[in-house]
Length: 320
Length: 250
Image (cartoon, rainbow over all chains, first blue to last red; front, side):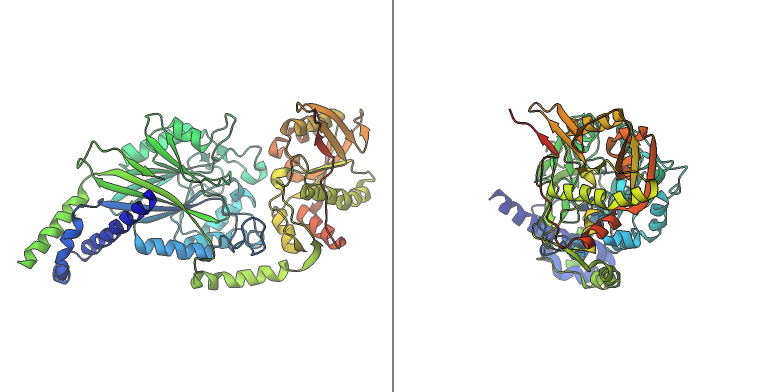
């Protein structure tokens, strides 16, 4: 019941946001055109949130370009990039302030990869308008030089902050982080990769050096938050959702750090009922999400912002 | 008069956008990509030539299986894992014999390397790509009995249904190693020839005993091609769960 109310509220809010966007883009010079919409003023009573950012995300798509077949024993007819593309287009037409992110392992899993080495995966992610992805362990399957070669087909950013790549063919091709300016909001995205030793053959990852993700995360967050003034910090992680051992995972990373708002995870192919909410070192809430694998699901996180100082006492509301 | 109001509104909005922003509300949900969402024609048209080229090669029927199988069917050993390890024994054995004059004693693959289940019905070239998308080749390690024992301990400790053949491992009710046999015999003080993938030979999946192999012979035989050859050889694939890796009850 609560959910129904929530979505109705959302719809009216989204409509108001669209109007806001329209007026802003037409600007004062065409003020006359908007004159007929004087009644619009009432739409701002009560005032909706001033900004709305939508994050869409995938992980471990593993070359699943086509949906699973109808006779699949687990996921009949699910997934497929053509449908994902339609969904992304729908969301973007509803809220143009949308970022599309992937948490790695887009390579390996169907003959499309064996035949084309990742070319088609990267071309399709580019066509779907992905903004960033990261390096999963399976990106190395045809060797690190193949990642470098296939990046030619990528119109999105390949991010990673904890692999030292200076002595590899990926030197200069992978950024630790990227700031995306969306509706005058600064969204900082950085990415972390899993320890490769014991998981990937050395002859595939070559001179890639893995660095402890927790320290690197703190450093990246400091740069994004303090130096670059980001309004929101997102971590793309291929560390894995949760391990019983001491091995670093997304839940531990969220608890051990500060100033990360959202961790988009991968690697463990974890299906979650809903995003996890973890308290960080400062007791603030961090969202950790992962959406299974193979493009069966797309995760959607909506962030609503308001002017600072309007109601400072209000705490952050999380609806998952 | 109207014009005045509009100008005021635009000004108000502009100044508002410059104010520092505070995150107020977050909503998270998941959308299943099902057939209720229409396919994008633009992307379908782009994929079609790639898909047709792949399909030509993939859809040839090689064998038939009456029952679906998945690596999560049972604990410790599964029909799909047994089939894969048995296939390596049957297909790589003669290649190794021809090349070295020796016999493969046992086979071990890794559970994580079974990349998909097999659906009931026709087994095609695509099935082989699904279960083994990687380019790994068969390699045979010559292991001293101590390293073989380390492998048995690794299996007993992990209790994961890694595919094995030629080897029997029994753990007791408490989960400790009870017995291990190679082709029905206790492990003796001699070297054993263990067929596996070149991924595991390099210590993948923490199978560190392979790093201490006395000798490694790679067969230039990709696992995927081995499965394709195995499927071609058989009319029906109907593997069973058995006692090769089992736990005793109290």
